[in-house]
Length: 339
Image (tube, rainbow, N blue to C red; front, side):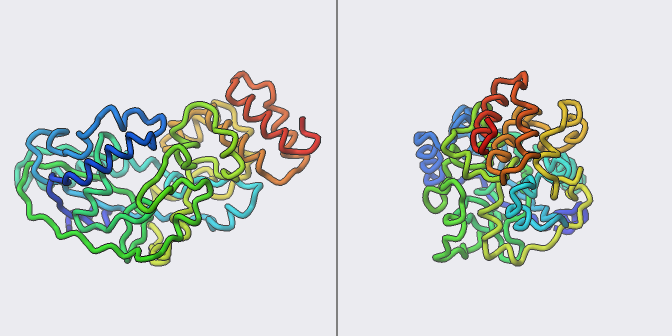
């Protein structure tokens, strides 16, 4: 753990590789219900996701690591309440966490190798790994009803990463869950995506709709998206355990490009080149300029009516992208005199 803290991790734990039949049944039921939406890779890898030793033969243990990211940013609730401003999920305000965590996990794995030579592989959302399940078994927290990992002193504002190793390390004892009867996360979900405790239908989740979905956002769900243009934090913002989350001092996760308080009109005006330059090194970069505009068009359709909003939308009414044009037309129809 001391080596992990030197690299910026807040907690390190170790679990075995047998996740149990109940986990496999749960994953199978979730996939069969179609709750993964267009994320075909979830089904493509099948049960390999629940069997670490099949993903990397010889694996005996999973070392899970947790790194806090709650940024020193403009107030999230105030941002959500202001329909003229864009809301970006707090995890995406700074540098791409994949790069940050992977680099440090590689250093940790190499440090372990210097003392105890081992076969290993590092993962940060880069392969079919049930990271929350592994982390909960490694005593880094418990699975909340919103399916994210929770910990009493840290809430849920943290990233997870794993090292698969062939070392027979001692396993940590899982923590008891502490959600009790609380349903705050379920009640707060804008689109009703948490269809039952511990079960999310990605097809209704705003994070899925604004990041993973490539085509049109279902019209019936657009009004509930509000001003959320990349991801959604509502289930975390209302969680009582997040009262104890500490601000992150990691410079890599500090807000970039003023994205914690930017206006929708401002961001909608970015050209493709500006988008590429200003999101370089950010997780936002992966959705591309077209989906960026699609998301903001929806948010502008939900924004308070103003001449500025309508003018911004009209300026892209003939956008080269049919996807953008469709969402702009929908947004204009939401504003009196906009069509």
